[in-house]
Length: 446
Image 1: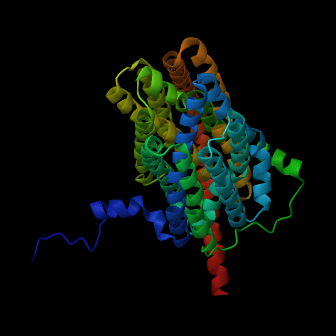
Image 2 (image 1 turned 120 degrees about the vertical axis):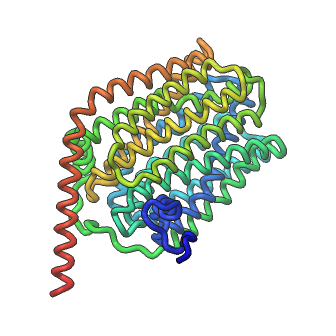
């Protein structure tokens, strides 16, 4: 008998089975369409983020104004997030996402026209960033709650979240690297133009999906404020969700603002140019991509709280050491750690929240996730810009890293309180799923 390995029949534990398990959510047609369409669009999005930061720095040479521009877009998502999430519950998700992607395309194309015509001003950049913040307030809870419609098997939902994160961060790796080259060769306007065109890929993927109606859409809807209060009441009373969202808010408040200061590090600390900024951003994206792949390879949601704890520690240590570095290669290596820790924290929080929240409250609770993710960041950006103006970018980044470590210590103290509640919730969810399967089987037999 031949002892040659048979790759056609993958067994549990084999490399082929491991790869198939890592990407199992892509077996769902709708999610596969979304994956390829969104991947194309996100590369353009990260090119625009890099080009916007570099354009503002070239126009102003001010760390404070870098923070102001970032604040102007993110504060809108923070203010409107919960209200937008209530509206998302009432709307058909695919139609909503087509509208948000079309509006985002218009925003990028407007940036492209103004920049290529050499008439763009700081005020126009801020106005367009505010418009993008308005779009994100509806787009992010809509996109996150739409995942459950694209994945037919709920067992693959956590994997879909991880793959979605890997998609974002693969683009975060590729987009800035391409963007740095395009800025150096042709200018920032071409990055905006490419981004505007790239949105049509995700719009096309949404339009060709075949979706089943989401269960529970026929329920009687209460008033806007009543639904908003119901979502807030759920977040407030559910200790695990409340705790992880508070940690995410602190992490984004203190951990995210480093990205606002990267043009200062590229230009003043490391004495580089747009290429240097592109490499720093791409290095953070590489770390974030590795983080998302690590989550996609997980076989269950067990141990996610420890993973979240470790991610925030890695982020804090990486930021402190990055603030001390004056060498490009070391700074690039530390950006890997920072990107890994930040996105690991955000993606694990997303997975924990999505695994705990019921379907009829998903969009509203994801609105509070958006509030924690996007909402804390604008205040952190403004704070980082002001601090960097006074004490310098390196000291600012080290200070924010220290606060991340404080947050990790606080979360460690909360773990014994939230774990029993999480286990009870998962057991209840399993019993409910078993009852639903039995009911469907009974109806089919009848």
